[in-house]
Length: 501
Image 1 (tube, rainbow, N blue to C red):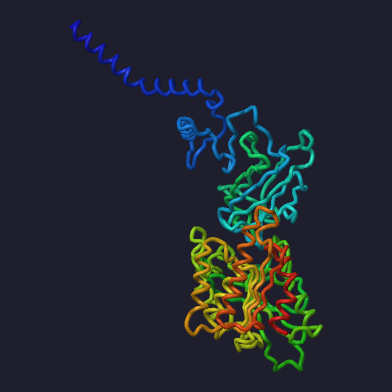
Image 2 (image 1 turned 180 degrees about the horizontal axis):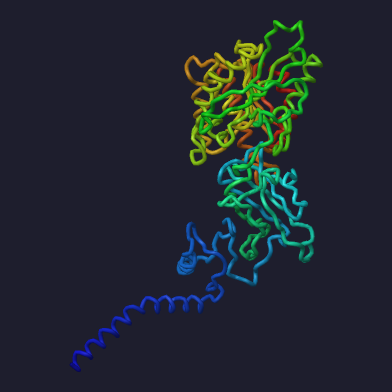
């Protein structure tokens, strides 16, 4: 029995050693790391690593073991962690070079018509402050660059920023995943020693939902058939049904602007040239949550009254809300963001919207007197409609084409495929315009901006190479203009004169 007890005791001891050996090895290795470089043993802040969750600490140790900082790249996360070197931690507001905020809109409701703003203790919590409007990036995220806030200069400590994101109005404030408003956001302290001289740290945030996703929300804009329209001239509503990319059952109020003489007796038999424009809720009035309008009603009234353009009709077709990205996408250029449903949308234009307008109003059907237009992706779908259906649309009004958003090669193939097709019929007139600062005026965006301008010029060359006469093409490069309704409004007169001289 004594010998048996001894054997059992030995087995228990060996089992204990076998169980604790891995833990002892980790402790020993950690002590060695600390001895070599004590500053790298401190693990401070939230978990690190994509999808780390509660295992973030293990990921941080793993980084240390392979010689990487525990919080490498941490400032580019939605909740940027603090760095390990606590002695170097500073508030980003204290950096003379400033900093950058990037926002991912998870539900993709932010658009150029309803952009993201930042409101906080630095601008009176104004959710529609145009000075603090974020710019859309080519990767579908939104960005704003901050200079050093007042009060932090000369080594003084000012008030830390406190802020939230909204789309121009507190009714459209950011919401959490559970559809409740978050608390005020603040920037985390960072390790300034990890920045290169003059480098601006980047902080990324994400918005799960927006206020207009609440069941009780009622949009007060052109989607509301009872909302009054403050317009110059006469605008009539025409309800149509149909769409694409998730808006197949959508009911829209098409807005039809009529020239001043339309209802006069002498014009009773006149049929008018017509221009169909996408994002129609932005054309004639500055609706709630939209920073500016195109002012096409005022511009057209002045041009017709001054005999600079013949009388014509403008048909504003509101976009499909959440479906806008898919509806206006004619090519699979941004596969991670949307399925291209452009063909289905054009089919609705041809079979539902255009016939309804032609039955209700005295508009031309001769394609040389029918134009189609839009801005950004709205311009892309307008171009697609004219390329694919020259029997319906003979004129193109394309502002700020997004030919470098997503896959540039997909856009190039799409354009060249249509213009090089045997027997391809070209529009009778094409207006193309692009801003020299489409993605923003910052020097860091110069290369990206040039890409958009070059792509627009290349399209103009392709059109002329395919046989479009010089006099039938107007290409405008507005050097300092950005991707905004204000820029499109400022160029509208020249465009309309070219199309309807």
